Image (cartoon, rainbow, N blue to C red; front, side, top):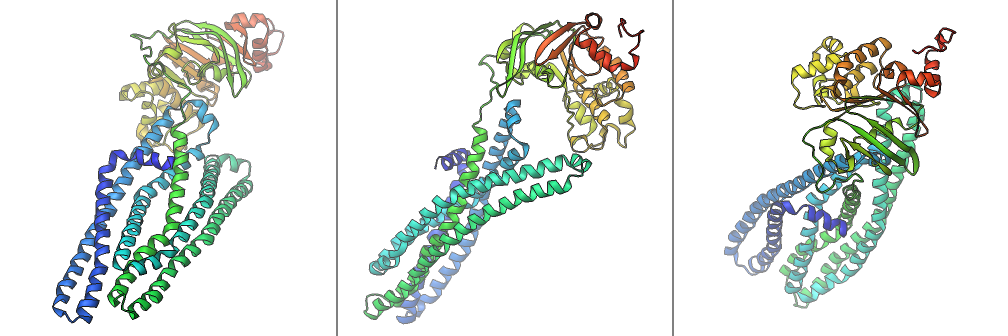
Length: 583
């Protein structure tokens, strides 16, 4: 019930539409509860009583009632749908906005397919409940109460006899709800797993084909699909067990009306018109009972879906701003790491990191895979928080900064290039929505992307596929570099961003970047020595610690880990002439 209450509370802003739809619903029920009485008058007074002058007015009333009902049913359906769509619109927007505010750590733990399942299937389950479930629940509840009162007023004895089986139907409905709710929870969870399997396979289809693993992926999907089928069969069995019993007990009411009602007519304690009206009212009583299982089914699905949606909305961000965050008048770009320690999933990643990057300097970070290079630069923009120590930008702890202001001055070229399904211009402009066409072209020229862009069919207006499909790895990286450059940030972070380009292109990009790196603090993560040898300071990480620091010449003179990395990359020059020289 807590989930249902939250769904209702969420839809309060649109209650005007819901109230109008409910008004139409009640008006429709009122007309339906009136028409059997007219049928009773026609049978008792017109047909048996001979009052034929009443027939035409009564038929006109029935005709008018039918016409009004048609209009009311249209309006009811329209406004319930508007109510559900408006609520879903806001709920989907809020959920998406909330997901945008969650930190990297949340996405490290949750799969994309799982989140997509909640954004689509679970939200649709809530919409069905708002558009159809509420309407059906109210309608059948009012019918149940209204019809019960009408039957007791019409003929108390026959009404009591007719409703004798309703407690048994209510008990079966209660039992069905207890059984079916956990089943639907399992179904929604399995649907998310199935959705994730499909999403991951389609996203990684090139890897699948490259390793000829199509059969394996098909079998894996079939296993999850089979589990999904079995869970739905379990739900069907629960439905098949309880629904026929409820339907059977509902049908007994009809037998009671014919048997007991007939005996009352024979004894003069009821009229034929009473039996005709009772038969019409009986369907208004039986239908809610027959739909009880379906309504419980729909409510259980909505509850399960709502629980999964609110789980996301209730997830707080571990990266929180202070009430009055720091907003600077100007930016310099100085970065200081002061005895920083960072752990990921209880595993130490960075240990006692301590260095100063003066504004406008270039800091290179090198080390083996898994040494903590990317984790280090992720702390600058506060995508993660330190476990101890502090990261300061312009002398202020990043925990005290406004996140928007902090990140607005950081341009990141990520190791894994991601481009949107948009034009090339749109992808570059993503870094700075206010950038002019001239600024976009200039950024592309610096990134050595302008020439290949102009060779494309529509130049900067060429639409690239999802994740940059249709472009080579080097082309994607150069567009990503242009996207960061056009932002014109005070801090530029390049996370192995030239790994997919050849040496010649890398040289051209680095040459162009020299002008961009002036007056801005630059962090370069790279494996190629050629990318870092001109840095002011080179930090060499090993198992999360800085084991060497200095410029290229001083590190070469130390003949330590950095020297060995250079030696490996230039092993063809491993000769007497190389030894003792500085590359």
